[in-house]
Image 1 (cartoon, rainbow, N blue to C red):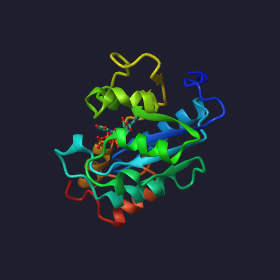
Image 2 (cartoon, helix red, strand yellow):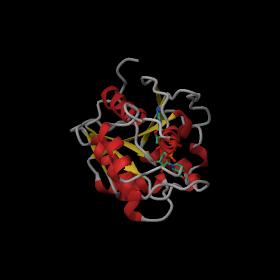
Image 3 (spheres, protein in one colour):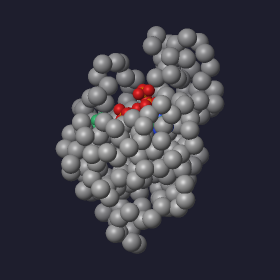
Length: 206
Ligand SMILES: Nc1ncnc2c1ncn2[C@@H]1O[C@H](COP(=O)(O)OP(=O)(O)OP(=O)(O)O)[C@@H](O)[C@H]1O
Ligand SMILES: O=C(O)c1ccc[n+]([C@@H]2O[C@H](COP(=O)([O-])O)[C@@H](O)[C@H]2O)c1
């Protein structure tokens, strides 16, 4: 896929990508998606935002926010364009992207926001809190993900771009299951994250 047209009118503003996720654990699928979108959309920075309590994942135990935050820091530390925000963790309670985007806009008045989301999450977006308002706060970028259809059906025209990224059939669910079974997660997640999972004995009983 070629270079993308600037989808918002804010010429001269910083272009801030936002990659929200539970990151339990962060894996190379997340990192490749962010890197690819950063290049295609000429983003100045991508901020990874680990969720506080992901309310649509309340059917399963989610690792402690501090563990997910630290794995995200470890995974992104070597890329000068990547950063990590604690805003959703520090707000406490259930995480809603409407709050994430309002807070990030208040903190980054010089920036246009580009929210990056995989095909599976994009297909659920109309179930998110205040879904209609989300598109006035950020431009949404849906990326391909193996096993999921990427579509903007039902979403506001001009509010979403669809982008093909290198296909990595990796999920956090599969990484957790592999650790629980004693299978390796080397090269599915960054090396430092493998070490952190081991050090903190995460996912052993998953
Ligand atoms: N392999 C992948 N390729 C592209 N996008 C991805 C990939 N994995 C996750 N994403 C996207 O990254 C964001 C955060 O995902 P999340 O942290 O829930 O990871 P996950 O692998 O889907 O986790 P889980 O398996 O626990 O549901 C979502 O927008 C999701 O669609
Ligand atoms: O705002 C909502 O209601 C909402 C519901 C589900 C998911 N999200 C956001 O979607 C992103 C990916 O979520 P997840 O659960 O797939 O890790 C993350 O930033 C979540 O906060 C947001």
